[in-house]
Image 1 (cartoon, helix red, strand yellow):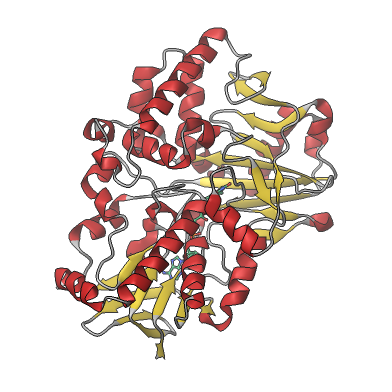
Image 2 (cartoon, protein in one colour):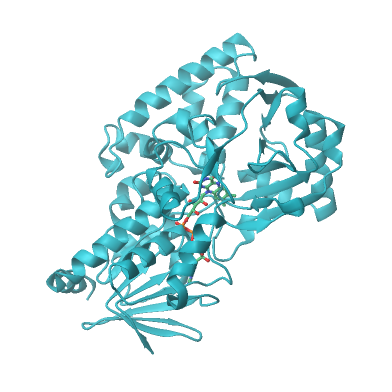
Length: 463
Ligand SMILES: Cc1cc2nc3c(=O)[nH]c(=O)nc-3n(C[C@H](O)[C@H](O)[C@H](O)COP(=O)(O)OP(=O)(O)OC[C@H]3O[C@@H](n4cnc5c(N)ncnc54)[C@H](O)[C@@H]3O)c2cc1C
């Protein structure tokens, strides 16, 4: 049995941050990670010709001060996403080139309708109180409405509807019929609005860390040293009057506090003794993740740039729904990233490997030309089959969940504190939100360590 002050479960950005902050504050910490690597839903690997590839979370943007702060701590610079050219929208097989966030070159009616919906989304998102979205005006009505239902009532143009539905539902990697409109607005608001969520320049896809996310998580793991234990899935957490025991197959840790930093969609894979309070327990049963496939295709050079294209394209329901230039800060090689989400991703993963690759490359050729057929490397990552992610990019709340159970998202349960991007009121769903949640959980542990009576009070609620 290892004895520590705090045991942190899950070494994604949330858990790494919590463990690091507690260790630096002088605590004895154990960070238990199920996989043979850290990073969780971020995963940076070496690619050909000296490049690096982010197989999970990759982009950062303005306002994400938590991740920029961490990058500064570890001396990781950022570089700007390539945007010198036109993006592309594909509707009914027809390609439209455009600049900015809204494809104004599509029919003026569709573009106007999209613009109006964007304005309305921005207005509604502004009205959501981030710490308590269930207290928003019309919260109940919005939470009873799905994204799909809301769009049916607000989009009059068919192409505008198809594009908005695919783009917004894509952010939740699920069908629009699965996600609560209140949750859509809350997550959007937590990043600053629809422009931030869907935009590139000055928005969520504005920049990337040089060296990828791994350039940040590797030094964090190194500083944690022997406090970090890989290949250690946690199976149960047992609280008693004196402390808390965390158990896996080959591990037993005794601690005063625990931070659970695993994705909420799979938090119920851990057995809690005594059982968690009802609303937290039910929340674990009600926040699923969706399907996302991220494919990085490496070429000798980013050939699309010569044709005045940014590499960004969007084609609802296609096997390659979204493409974006994912090259490093160097001129060569070129990396084209294909992201397919929700129902289209589920369809894609049902194809055989060869058929899938052909389908994806053929889409790239259609949009960017024959050079797309000749990559030097092709790396697929299907997050829906990752046991310790349970899907990606983030867990969402279906209708009714946020208003009924949202209050349990961050409330500690006795000695258990909750971290993970889903528990962050700001930048919920992004790496930045994960870091914020780790900072919050660490601060809560430190403040409770100084006031043990508060633990006893919350433990009483569990008995
Ligand atoms: C394809 C994809 C693209 C994305 N793109 C972006 C992007 O461009 N920008 C951005 O900001 N965000 C992006 N995201 C989202 C971002 O990656 C996540 O928000 C963030 O990484 C979540 O961090 P976390 O620490 O909360 O959870 P995770 O990273 O999921 O970490 C949880 C950790 O817990 C471990 N674990 C699970 N169960 C157990 C257990 N029982 N015992 C021990 N350990 C366990 C897991 O192995 C994992 O390491 C993307 C995600 C995906 C999948």
